[in-house]
Image (cartoon, rainbow, N blue to C red; front, side, top):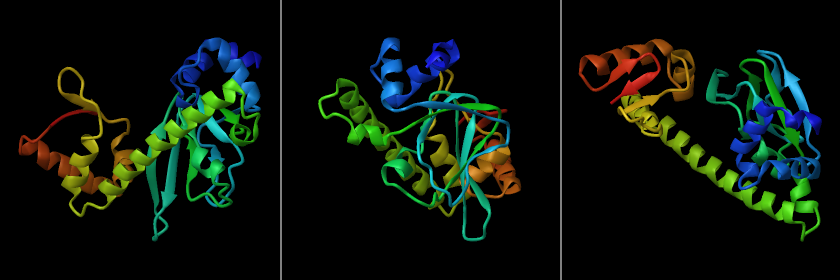
Length: 221
């Protein structure tokens, strides 16, 4: 695919776990093996509707996407936002889920590379590129499982403060002890499954109690 020569797209592929331990020359072979197709989406456009089937997994080459689900009250709960290099939908595709429990939206203009993961378990057994992709797919699914376990732990907390602290504990601290939250406050509230006003009040109380320092999206605790 000639588009993959785009430097931005190449950098995204280098970050994608599905293409781990591959060099740039192997990307074209892997994408051809997976019957890769590029599709562009406008800001706010739906990539996957709730209840629809996802036929191919996607890799974000450019832009940002957001996954969300609906709770029992039909409120939309944001799960996470993803940027360049993120692989999504692999569990839905591999398990042939006919009705997706999540929806995926383009937060801003996004370019997605869709890949047919079925090729991995139906292709020639001794194909070196197939074996590499199979190993990487297993690692990706394992990492997603760990993330979902953390998400369940957060949402199972009755205390909003506990939800905040457990979530912050999943983020990497910089050299100054700050973590950077990849959401604005509205999206963070959705991610934690709480009301935005309640989240703002609790963060304010925690600052007043000297439990944290908040500098826009940077937090030290």
